[in-house]
Image 1 (tube, rainbow, N blue to C red):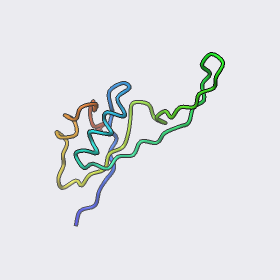
Image 2: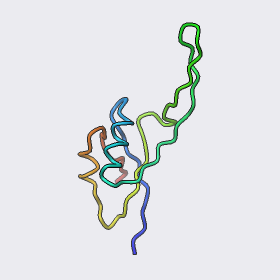
Image 3: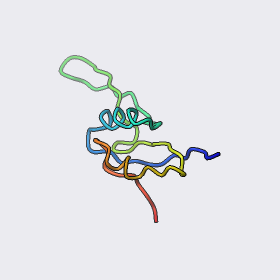
Length: 84
């Protein structure tokens, strides 16, 4: 039995929603921590959710399947971050 591992993924600028949607459609589990940010627009204060780590999210999959190419070719994704 193989366990899932978490990997760091870099998405294209301002494409976190697009990358999340396309990864979920393919059956991947993702984690994108969001931060509530309050900004002032003219006379109103508006609260928005922004990614805690801009440009990056986490994706989980089993090492046995190793879908590197599938993830790297997903619309909105730049690449899986790797060391070595």
